[in-house]
Image (cartoon, rainbow, N blue to C red):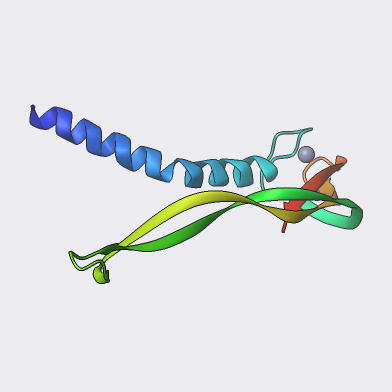
Length: 117
Ligand SMILES: [Zn+2]
């Protein structure tokens, strides 16, 4: 295996690990953009209203802990096994209608922001 290949693999791993973070930054970056003039960072929130809420589910990680047994059949505290599994739990989604005004071109628009708790 060449060194170049190893470095490429490491970079790929790092890229995959940070992908959700890049997605978050991208979402935040786009949320700051005015749909009319395309300028960023000139939006002011003028009003917020509750648009509704509904029952939903969300995925959480649950960790199961088990121990391997020694040759006498006793739990061996040094051989702890943790298994992560995804479970669906009940959650509440809340939609908030956010009104924006662009200070650059005066365009007003609204956007629904959904938060799940
Ligand atoms: Zn604008």
